[in-house]
Structure formats: structure tokens, C-alpha cells
Length: 590
View 1: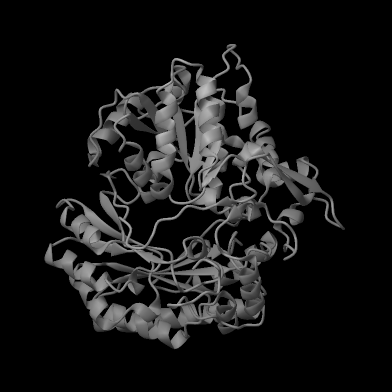
View 2 (view 1 turned 120 degrees about the horizontal axis):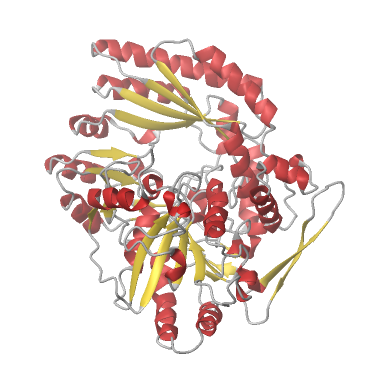
């Protein structure tokens, strides 16, 4: 039986070790919402960082709220609705609401939260009187990686979206908030509109209601495509992201909880971005230029870790950081346990592996992607199979027990011969894993993760299609039959259905929001909602033209479309491109 919400939140709060102490009786009351459950939110470093930033000003305090179980939880039954964990206040009792958006598949949860409070879905409808005759709703905003990747499938839900890094945007934005909330004696709706209009002139602020997307049907497509974008006077044509400089203060978990996905783990960000340029990786492109955290602050974060806490080093390519050996060695000297996000094979030398083993690391996670030599060139990750096998040998013979290896299926131009190459590589990896484990006289587990390729905005492969689900399922079944009965190997296969939903939103437009609302209102799957809305599924999963206007073209990431097109062309010609180097001017960022 589910615990009443107050008891559940008491348990969560009692488990938390927090670096934030805040007087909750401030002039401005803000709420930060993560549209998923507590355990997921509290393992999200971006969410924790924004919570810390919003509690920094003296004039404002910020609480947290999460997705709740609307079917079983007494929160809804007793008419208290969605409440915050700190003060148990209803979310509509706050002046400002911030959503932290990290995953496309959480979009449906935004609607669930709005619906639970009778909040009109669309920002434009929140300017009208509500069902009680009032004409005021809190200022509802959103940030996170989704906001500067492709915000369009949810943009009309929000009054403001933040395009870029919160540390760079918030100082100027919160000054505007403070100025206008000093005038709270005037109409709250006026204050809200004044904040929207004044902040729209700041870099990194996107006001979706100021942009009208014009759609029209073209050629054989059943789905309308973007013909033009009409921008209101005084608003910028494109929203330029706002970014931190090199040597930035890293994000470090301000709260740890034993109920988080990464239980009692202090996450420490050692870098943002990646210079490698894997063509499928959105984070590698939207976080350019690759930047390293302040060394002093990382060392300080390690030193302040409590005895019961583990350290999780966070970055796209942790082992490629020139200071990672220093961080691991210092953690070892301080008797701290640590873990690493997935690492590249060509960065794992024997000294690094030795430190990892001496620190008690039980598992190393490796991003392989594919066993096909041809596809490696397409995705710009041309690591030879010999290097992969040699690295596994070094890891296991050092004494580390387990390896997780991630692969993608459904990559551009992939056929059954590529799948067979991947299966052959995995079998060789297993043989090497078992042989090296026998030398240690103990054996762990080789875990293989399979995920469908999802084309993402701001990558050279953004124009590619999402593979037909039946074909994906056939490929998965082939891999499963080849590997499932082999000893010492475990298969984790991500859902094709979930990947389909992710792909639908990842490259979606404001039309996608109409379908999402139809899905929610009529309890339909996204697939059925597409058909019910009069469209064909393949029109959303199709290969895009390199000449058409893309939904995310409303943003200015600094990367030129010319560069992305060139990289896309090189991918289809099986040509690799070296990573960023000093003096590089290829993409337009530097």
C-alpha cells in the first residue's frame, strides 16, 4: 500500500544530506518541478544545480516538486493536488514555477501535472480567467537540455524558456524578477507580463508566444512542414544561447539521498561538452566548445565528500580529461570511492585502470556503439575491434570484475551484415572477457546494452530517419537469438516503443504538441494519436530534407548549418573527421 504523501516526503527529507539551508519566508516563492519521480530527479545534476542557483538570492526561496502517482496517491484524493516536498504547499501557491526538462519521454508528465491542477495547457490560455474567475496563474518557465536542443514540441506550454546554461542566464533574469516583484501591490498579471517582456531582450530567453510558425503541405507529404516563422516586433529572429566560459565552477550535487537512482552519490561535473564529434551525439555538439571545470573546485568537491557518500565523476568523456588521473588519485588518497560515466577505449591506459582497480571500482562502462567498421566511420567513432578487445583484457586482468558495453541499432544505412558484425564482435568480447577472468580465478558479468538510434537536433545525423519499428524488432530478435543462451553475458534491450516516442519528439514541431495533447485527452498512444490526428506515422519518422526549415532553427547555437551539412555528407561517404583542435574554426562556435 502506498504511503500517504506527507509520510513519504518525510522519509525522503530525512534521508537527504543537504548543503542548502534557506529561510523559506522570502519575498518571492519559486518552485522547481522535475516531471518525473523523486528518485530520477535527485540523480539529475542539472536539476540539483538549478535548485541551488534559485536558492542563492536573498529575496527568493525555491522548493521542489515531482511527478506524483495520480491513480493511487491520496494527494489527489484529498484535493491537495501537487505539493512541494519542503513546505507541502500546492504548486499554484507559488509566484514562479520552473520546469527542469531533460528527457523527451517526460513530456506527457508535464500535461499530467498541469491537468492535476486544472492549469490550461497553453500559455496563451492562461491569460484568460480560470474556472474560478481569477485571471492569474504563476509565471511558468522551463529550462534544461531540451530547451536548447529542440524546445518546439512543448514550447507553447511555457511563458518563458531558457536557452543555454542556467549559471549564465539567471543573474540578469533574476534581477528583473526582483525588480518587478517589489511592485507586488500592482496586479500580478501585469507583473508577470512585465517580466516576460523585459526579460525577452536578454540573451538566452525565449518567449514562445512571440513566434508564430506557419505550416503548409508540400509535395507528397501528408504532414504540413514549416513554411515560415512570423516574429512579433521587438523580439529577436533567433534565440541565441547563453553560455559559460572556460574554467567554470562545476555543478556538484547540493543534496544526496539514499532514495535517488544513484543512491547517496555526490555527482561532480569535471567537464562540459566533448571535442570528439561523434555524429549521433547531441550533447557533443550543443555543449561546444568543450570546457573543463575549475580544477580547484573539483578537488574541493572531492575533499568535502562525506564518508558515507560515493563520488560520481560526470562528463561526456571523463577519461579524456587531462586531470582525471589527478582526480582519481586524490580520491584514492582521501579514501573516497568513485565511479565514472562511460569511457572511450583509446583513453584507458594501464595506470588509469590500476587506480580504478585500487579504488575498488567493480564495473567499467564502455560505449562501443557498433561492431561494423563501415558504420563506425558514419558515426565518426572509428575505434578498431582489436583496441576494444585489448582494452577488455587490460580491465579484467587488472582485477575489475564487470564490464557494461553499449551498442546502437538502426544506425543510418545499417543492414543485416552490419548486425552480424556487431554480433561477431560481442562474441569475441565475451571470449576475451571469460579468458581474462579465468586468469583471476573469478568471473563477473559482461552486460550488453542495446538501444535504437534516435536522430537528434543539432547533430550531423539530424536529417536521418528513425528506423521502421518492425525492422528494428527483427534486428533485435536476431541479436537476442545469437547471444541470449551464451553464458557470462547479460542482455539489456531498450524498448523500441520508448525510442519511437523519443524520436517523435526529438525532431518534432508544434504539431507534435497537438498530437501529445490529443494523446493525453483521449488516452491514446502516440502512434494512435498521430493517426487520429489525420497524419501518417512515417511522415514523422522520415528522412528530412537538408533544405527544409527545421523546428529548432529558431535557436542559434553558434554551430552553422553549413558545417552540419558538410559533416552529414562526410558521414554518407564513410569519411571520419578529427576532433576539435586549438585554432579550429570549422563549426562556427569558436
